[in-house]
Length: 314
Image (cartoon, rainbow, N blue to C red; front, side, top):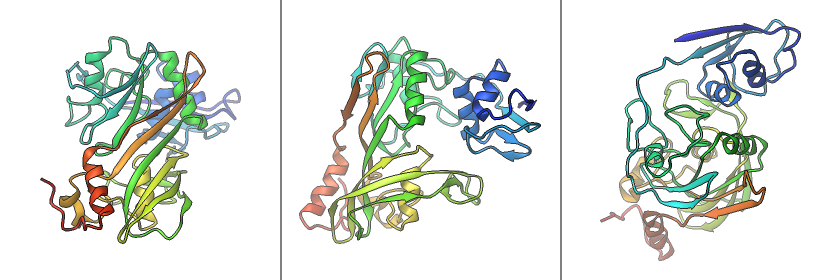
């Protein structure tokens, strides 16, 4: 692993951490630094940096650990992606359940990126060869809308919208138990789970701020259908937050009750709406994606007074 050590001078004091690093090392773009911070590869005075907007202080010792470059490159595959919208700047996909967004350890192909490389000859290169075009991610078992960019200018502009909260993402989720509130906000920091590195949790240690807004769409006897909107975009955010307030998402294999896993045959979380300012026209775009069939089937059973604990999907 390559290591970069930089000491903050008077010129750099007061700058955001991501801005300071990108301006002081030619191999570090601002977006790349933000990804490294997300992956806990940046330390300030020996402690993991958790926010790209940390204001650098004089004589701060900053350590950047660059992952080893592996002989791995995404390749094109015809995966019949469900393209909702496409132009010369952006492409929006309605992601299927079980599909991973980009290649990684143990998942070299069959991802959204592999499919994008088949149908697009032009994708932004900001996130490197394994994440071309990818601006944000959706969990493997979450379905719904995902935007990718075809050039670096569009990528930078949409990334800025995510940071500035001018890009909005809305989800529909079926959760366990009957929520007593019609709407609410969960403001609780999220960090890596101490005992399981594959999970996240609400914690005050080495965490980042996370805010999820929700409103109830429909009450059932043992469940609630909710709409969630993200103010921040932390890993597993909605799943962790709903578990935290004791209304975990039905079918979630990491954070929910296992007794409904076999009956739902899928995680009941769907990114149904995506809004952003188009990078070229400056017009607001709002795109929608219908619920997947397995989600509709479960809701139909509940609407008819059935019990999904007893339901076995064919």
